[in-house]
Image (cartoon, rainbow, N blue to C red; front, side):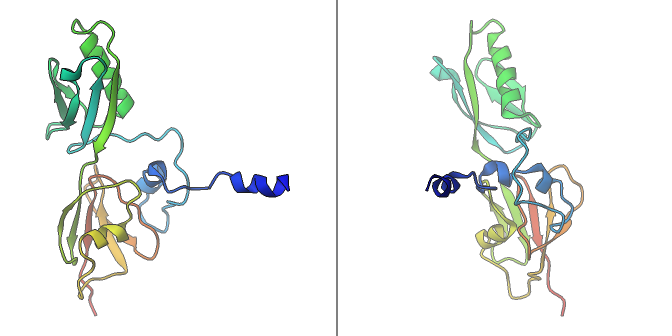
Length: 196
């Protein structure tokens, strides 16, 4: 009986949580046939902030310094008293350390700061979808779900593949829609027209 019950509590290979959705293996894959979104993310992977991300900064005991802030077009976040702080390409922990040092520099004696993601930068779904445009990203989002957010395919759409240009890449890459294709904050997705 104990052996039977112990199997009920075995950890799942992938719970579909944000760390699995933001797997660097999937992010760096050049083709969906190479991508392994079913593999858990290595514990060393940490999300890097980008332009358009909104963060929540909590400075304990200093409500006037806390709030929600957006990373601007220059890659910085501007906070009360300390001004603009570079944030693009930093992890949440890196930015938290930077803010702690900046506030400690004569303003606060022993600042305790927490930085969290409030809203990820948007994705863009273009081409042969019913409602091209900007859409909110959520962890675990797939390319198929992103197309659904955009109203689905048009009758002329090539539903077999989707083209994605990831943040930091200059060219888009084709991905097979028959396999799960993960989407990441800031991605540009394009559905091409089908040729008969």
